[in-house]
Length: 637
Image (cartoon, rainbow, N blue to C red; front, side):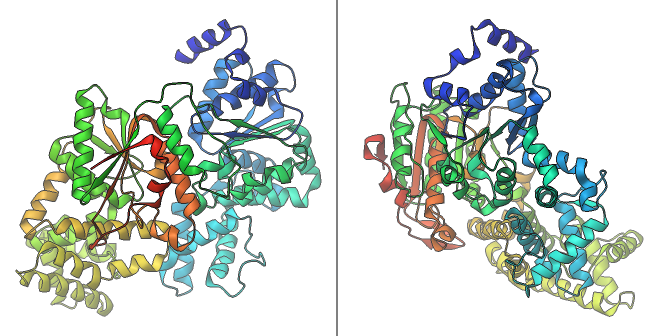
C-alpha cells in the first residue's frame, strides 16, 4: 500500500517537525492563542495543518476526539486523512470533514431539538429546484424564475438569514417562496445544504448547554481555506470559539475568489479584531514556481488595497520570464497557443502538464476548434466541451430538424424547449402515430395538427412550433448564423434564460452568443451540420496525456508546468460585470491565482480585436498587464 510505505518513510525521520521550514514550524507548535496562518500559493498549507494535528496528538496535548478540522471539499478532507495516516498511528477520532459533513453529524445528534428526526434526509440542488418549481406552479407563478429564486434562497442561507429574518424585504416574492419552501421541506423531514449550518446555529442559540458541550469538547479547531468562509460558517465558528481558544485558521486573502458563491473575504481580514492576542504567521516560501513567475504574481497582487500583505518567494532559480503575446484576433491567439504547445511537447513537456485558463466558459470554443484542427489531445476540466453543452445541443437540434425533418431525436429533444406545454403524454401520441404510419415524429406532429386529437392549448403551441420550423425551411438564402438568431429570438429561448437572472443562466447566454460567432464561419446549413456531426462523433481520448482547458476559478488548487492565461483584455478580464460592480480587486486575485498555477512557464495573451457576443470589439489590453513588473516579463508580437 502506497500510504503504508510513506508512513514508514516518515517514521524513519527523527521527527516530522524536522521537515518544516522555520515559519511552518512556528505555525505548527503555536498552540496557546488564536492563530492565523497566511499561506501564500504553493507554501505548504496542507502540510502545516496535518503536521499540526499530528503534533497535538503525538505530544499529548489532546486526544484525537478533541480536535475539529474543517475543510471546504471532500477532496481536501480525503487528502488530509491520507497525510494524517502517514504521520500518526491514531487519528481516527479526529472530527475531520467539510463544514456540511461536520454540521450534519452534530444535527443528527440533536435533531429533536428543532422538531426533526435523526433520520432526516439531505436534499441536493436538483431536489431544491424541483420543490421550488412545484411551489411556483401551485401559486400560478411563472416557473421560469425557479433558478433565480433558488439562488436567492441559497445566498440568504449563506448569510445566516432564516426565512423570517427582518433583513429580507417582507414584501418580496422570493421571501414568500422561501417561507413556503422551508415549511415544505420540514414537512418532508428534510434539509438542504444551507440548513445544515443554519439549524446547528439555531440549536446553539436556543440551547446554551449544547453549545457549551461542544466548546468543552473541542480543545483545538483548525480551519482550511478560511478566506472562502461565508457568513453562516463564520457565525458557527465564532460560536464554537468566541475567544479564539485553540483556533487556527489557514488561508490566503490573495486567493479569495468566490464572493459570487457567498464567500466573505472580510472574515479573514478582520481575524485579528475578532480574537484577542492573535498571532499571525506568514508562509511566503513557495515550493512550486520559478522566481520570475512569483515576482510577476507578487507585483500584480500588491495593487490590491484590501489585503493583509505578504510576498511569496522561492529558493529556486528565476527560470524563464513570463511571455506576453499580442494577437490580432481570437483566431490568432488560439493559433499562438496551439503552436507553442506543439513546440513545447516536442521538447519534452507532457500535454498533461499544460493548462489553458480562461475567464469565462465560452472562451474555450476557439481553442477547441484549433486543437481539433491540429490533432492536439485536450479535455475541458470542470465543464463540457463546447458542442456538448446543453444549450448548444438544443440550438443545434433545432437546426438539425430544419435541415432534416425526419430527425426524430432532434425533434424530441427540443419540442418543449423552451417550455411550451408539450409534455410526455403528447409526445407519446406522436410516437404512436409515427409507428403506425412509419413516419418521423415531426411529420406525425404535423398530421395531428389537422385532427381534433389535441386539446386547443396544445394544438396552438404545436402550431407555433411547426410554423417556425417551416418558415425557416422555406428561406433557402439564410445562413446558419441567421437561422440560429431566429431560433433564439422567436422561440424566446434567450429571453427565458435572461429571466432566470443567475450566474449559470448568464454562462449559458454567453455560450449561445459564442455559438453565433462560430456560425459566421459557415456559408450554409449542410456544411455546419456535417461539421458538428464530425465533432460530436470524434472518439473520446482515453489517454491521460491531455492538455487541460478550464476556467480560472476551476484551476484553484492545481498546478502545471506550463500555463497559458488567455483573453487578458478589458471587459474580458477583468470581466465587464466585475467592472460594473466595482469588484476589480477580486478579479486581480483571480489573475494572481492563475499566474501561480504555473511551475516553470507562463504565457499571457490578449487580442487587439475579438468577436464578443457576435460583435467585433477592439478592447484595450487588461489593466493587469501594466501592473505586472516589467522585470519579470518578455513581450512577444
